[in-house]
Image 1 (cartoon, rainbow, N blue to C red):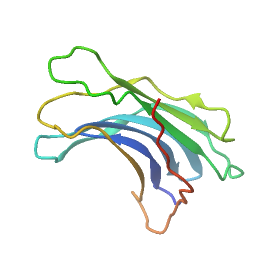
Image 2 (image 1 turned 135 degrees about the vertical axis):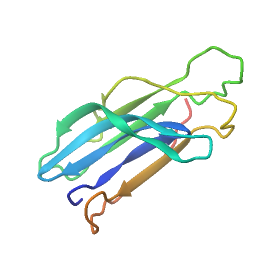
Image 3 (image 1 turned 30 degrees about the vertical axis):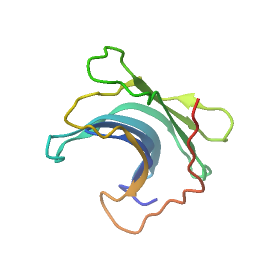
Image 4 (image 1 turned 60 degrees about the horizontal axis):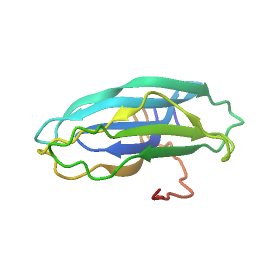
Length: 141
């Protein structure tokens, strides 16, 4: 990753959140970002805010595991049950630590498409950074 790069795993809809890695200068931190918002025309209203910051990853850390746990059971209009998502990370692939508060998922009619998972990497300052995603899997519980 290069200075300004962002990478992570996102739960995306009109209101979204992600867990990821932000590279800023010599600092590489795990973060949980929420409050990413789109308007009814799918234009960006907010690029989100950092809700929690995990450890600074030293140069010796070359692998990070990210996990998104979401209750994606259909929540039909008129139901009051709040469905949430939690975000987790691991630096050894075995012990996961939750980062940030539970993310409340929305159920508005305007965006009938449900939440989608994604993996991303983008530059905010300079091109040329990269990440390698070795696997992506979904489990139903």
